[in-house]
Length: 281
Image 1 (tube, rainbow, N blue to C red):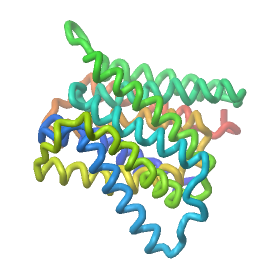
Image 2 (tube, rainbow, N blue to C red):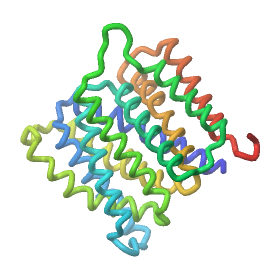
Image 3 (cartoon, rainbow, N blue to C red):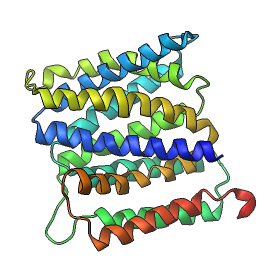
Image 4 (cartoon, helix red, strand yellow):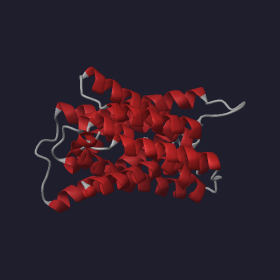
């Protein structure tokens, strides 16, 4: 169980890094969102297939309905995620993404009539309240509508991708196939880009986001998922916006406020309550 917890922490750090890298590549280095998404997917596919070949065990089947659906969900997430960070700050985008994911996963669990312990519900509410306190705009600030809608689409798609991953026995093989099928789907959106405005820092950021924090991170996520209830998988990801804001403070010199510290404590405390084994509840 300790191993799964440590891998879960590493995976959440990779997810937070995706937000930071995407925000840097699109907003700071001027990469077009579709170009960034395409390079990110291509780099992830290349990294994963190299690892699949090195392990000497190819996926038994390239196409299954689950992997096809996973690839479409991954493509929708990649496109929505990249577009959203044209106008959203990293922390706010992460709040919308993982807030939507939380609603979808808990809704699915209720639809499937899964038993959700009371403490898990309480933990989810505490964690989400902490996120709202941390990242919700105050005063005259408003959320850009286009960016918010794009991130809502990404959140729903990522929830679908997460739910599909619970049934995959081969984490790396499945993720490699998902990225391979996803690439031509994302490429269909390239005609809507600004015709290839590239900067070397932007390309390197997209390659890092694709090959490391996405490709390897998502393979690790598919490995961890079968060991977690769906609701715990959703709640754990609520830590990502907090990690994103902390990373933004360290890497982008964004202020680390008392509000951040207190709200972060709520989020992490809610997650801790949620992952208590049921026999201890």
